[in-house]
Length: 99
Image (cartoon, rainbow, N blue to C red; front, side):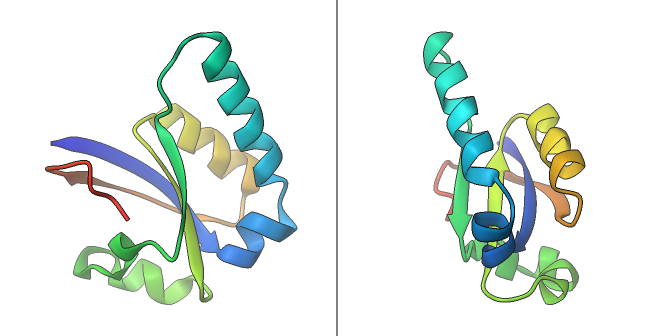
């Protein structure tokens, strides 16, 4: 089982109102320089938020939602501090088929 951590908010907030694209590009650049495998993804309208586990959380996020998902808890903590107005959470998944 893989543990995933995430920040979630409205798609508009994450992709237009905040400089998330710049943060993610810088992280990709850093990973390439250090030959590190990408361990984060930007998901638009992620299906995992529709699960019973996140029903209350999902109801608080304006539609359509988006999330940054990662296996790196420190990166998600950084995003939470940087972006402020986002929801955070975590879950375990038995496979890598996350949408």
